Image (tube, rainbow, N blue to C red):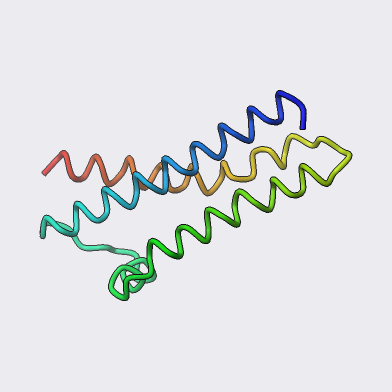
Length: 106
């Protein structure tokens, strides 16, 4: 893994971690305040049965380890593998920002 691919992978992974952690914290803060409910039925079910954090940890592991293994085993240093954690990271980061805006506007 050359320097550029390594930096892209690290940045993508960092965005994923910030997005997931921020989304979890702001969702739980909003729900615990009593002013908000979780609108996603799947997430709501995971929160209610106590497995949301576990599912998030497994998804982070998958989103980071698969590209990491592909990059390490591949002779072709394709930059696309380095940014694979970025897509779910951006989705969760947008949920984090959305939650933060909702919480601060009430």
